[in-house]
Image (cartoon, rainbow, N blue to C red; front, side):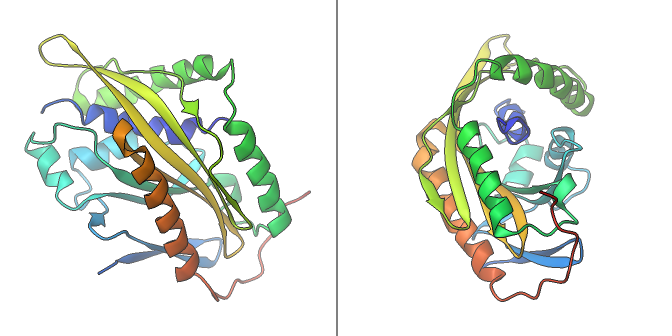
Amino acid sequence: MLRLSATFRTISVAVLLLPGCLLAASVNLGGVAIEIPSPFGYVSPKSPNSLLTRMARATDTADFKTLADLYPATFEEQLESGKAQQAVRHYLARIPMSLVALAIELQHFAQAKSNMRRACVPRDDASRAIQVELEAANARIGEVLGRNPQLAIGTPVPLPIHEDTANSIACSFVMKVRAPAPDGSDITETMAFTSVDIYVSKKLLMLTVYGAAEDLEWTRAAAKDWAGMIIKANAGATVKAAPQVQR
């Protein structure tokens, strides 16, 4: 399965192209407390009604639960003042809603890794599926901005798996994003993002780190570091009995 839902969080970053000590959060997943440390200098949006928060909500889907959505500490204020002019690096952690209450054994994570390997192979039907979701995303974002942003994104191009361990697997993607500028021209950016699936406290967490095209290696290093932080923060945690994934 192509990670379309993760891809569509890049839409929120695309809209941001238009003018205009570590902390850790604890989330409860089916009775299991998972610690999600924040990389230094990155924070969650502070205001529930800010443009950044509303954009994040607009690009959420019902299939996933967001655990952490982290931006540079000054970015929310810059966006509100119209000073944010470029795509921003940011971190996203989620879990499939269908797995929130379930305990995942290591053999089930092996299956998830197989799914990631398939996602990192180009697919002929990916473009059609993306366009269907893009129409819906444009409508939701339009409700926030008061106008249809007419965003367009190209099919994400997967790069080979670059990390595969017992409890993590990582793959990067590059894609083009086009958004209209106030003068009627188009702003086109090539973006990069790295997706990492990790196995922690019998949960499958899906991490994505976004950046500009030149940030590809940064997204890989940042995703690896963040995954390591989360795994370390939850090492030795007590996991209560939970429903098991059915074979």
